[in-house]
Image (tube, rainbow, N blue to C red; front, side, top):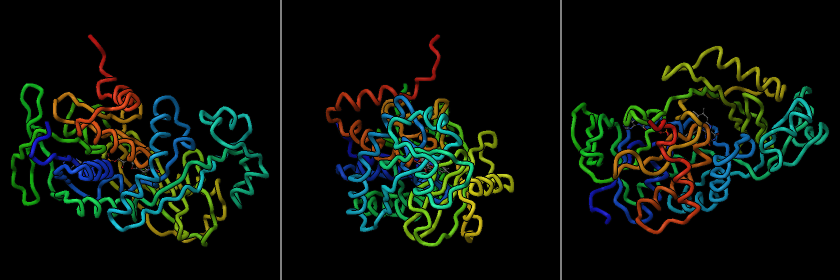
Length: 369
Ligand SMILES: Cc1cc2nc3c(=O)[nH]c(=O)nc-3n(C[C@H](O)[C@H](O)[C@H](O)COP(=O)(O)OP(=O)(O)OC[C@H]3O[C@@H](n4cnc5c(N)ncnc54)[C@H](O)[C@@H]3O)c2cc1C
C-alpha cells in the first residue's frame, strides 16, 4: 500500500533528481533532502553516454545498453517538463588504439566500426601520430549534464511538486527491526530533527556509505577541465586511455578525467592531476594545447568493489538503493529511475527488470558464513 507520507530521497544529485522526477510523474509526493547541491558528481561529469566506448562487459554492459536505448525518451520527458533543452548529442565516440591488435581485443570491439589510420584521421582531424587504429561507436554519445541536464531535472521536479530541503544533512537512519522509519537530520540552521517516513531512496552518491555503513561504497576522485575550441573542431567524442575529450555543441571541450582511488574525499585540483590531463590531450590531439582553457573542477565518483551500482532493496525494509554508479551514472540514470520507480509503484515488474535487480543487489559482495 502506498502511504500518504512524502517519500524521502536522500541526496539531490543526479540519481536523487532522476528518481524524484520519475516518482513525481507517477503522482508520488516526494521530498528531497540535499546536503549540498554543488558537490554532486552530476555537476562534475563529462556526460558521456558510453557503454561501448568505456569497454564495459557482462551485466554492466547490458544495463548500460538498456539505459542508452531509453535515454532519448527519458530526456524528452525532462525537456517537456522543464522547458530546458538538455544538450543530448548522439554524436558517436571514437576510441583510438596504438595497434590493430589492441583494437581487436577491446571488450566491446564487436559493437564498433573498425577504423584504420586513414579512417581514424578522417573521423578525428589532427589526431596524434601514435594512434594507428580506432573503433567508432556511433551509437554512443553525450549529454550536457553540467550546464543543462541537472538544471532541467531540478526545474522539472519543482514543476511536478517535488519539495526540496537544501543544506540538510542526513545523519542517521531511524529504523527498528530492520524496518526503515525515517531519518535524523541536521538542517541548514544546525538544528537536529527527526523526519518520519516509511519509504526512502538512498541516493547519496560517494557518501552513501556514511549514511548506511553496510554499503561498500568509496570515492574515486576525478579532476577535469575545459577548453574553448573553434566551433566544429571536433565532431565526435575521443575516448583515449586515461583522457577523453567531449565536444559540446558550442565548441566547449570537456576534458577528463583523473581516476584517483587513494585520496578519499581530499578536495581540490593538483598540479599532477592537471598535468596528466594536459599530457593526455597532447597525445590525443596536439593542436588542442593551443586552445584557451576555460574552467577547472573536480568531484567524487561513487564506486563499489565491482564498479557496478547498487540498485533496489537495501538491508532495511522501506529503504531503496540507487547508488554506486561510479563512472557511468549519467548513462545509467534513465534505467535507474525506471527501476526504482517500478519497485516503488507496487506494479508488476517485468522479468528483465527483476533480473537486473537481482544482479545489482547490495549484498552481492557479502561472504556467506
Ligand atoms: C570526474 C567525473 C567524470 C564523470 N564522467 C561521467 C561520464 O562521462 N558519463 C557518466 O555516465 N558518468 C560520469 N560520471 C559519473 C556520474 O557523475 C556519477 O555516477 C553520478 O553523478 C552519481 O550520481 P549520484 O546522484 O549517485 O551522486 P551525486 O551526483 O554525487 O549526488 C549525491 C548527492 O548526495 C548528497 N549527499 C551526500 N551525503 C548526504 C547526506 N548525508 N545527507 C544529504 N545529502 C547527502 C550530496 O550533497 C550530493 O549532492 C563522472 C563522475 C566524475 C566525478
